Length: 176
Image 1 (cartoon, helix red, strand yellow):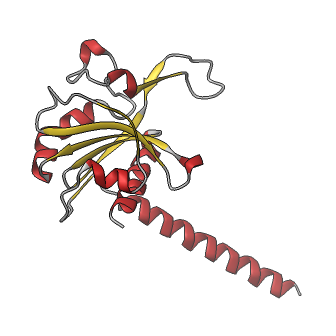
Image 2 (cartoon, helix red, strand yellow):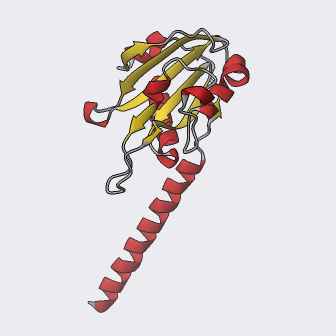
Image 3 (cartoon, helix red, strand yellow):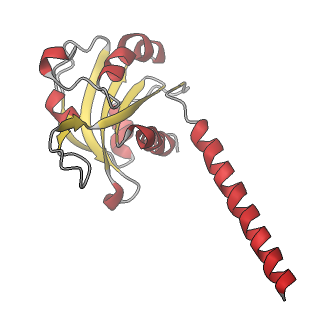
């Protein structure tokens, strides 16, 4: 009886170990920049259930043809906030738009008007209140990370370490 128990424990630990290794390898393969054969439009996002909250004037966002704030989640209760920026090509998204995306994402994101390169929608890129229980009620970046997939730049909500996963949830559903 004791041998069976020990064997079950070893088997359980092996399964858990393999599952966590597999999960880590998936996380490490998420890329910030990826190509796509398809040239996407904002309608591709709407057709998969992306809900537009507002459109931004792209004057000053060189090369962009569209910029939209909205929400999406596989389940309504899991919706996240995204800012979608459409360019005419992957090359232009990277060369013209990546610096703007880097500036407004991550823990050190620029969320002050005086420092921002593109001020349109800036107030939507920040949120108030600190982490629960921190006692800090300042203003923080909404978008922890971004992804460029084909001709699209996505700013994705969440802490820096989770936001790229949120981007890829959107990308994987967009590609289906």
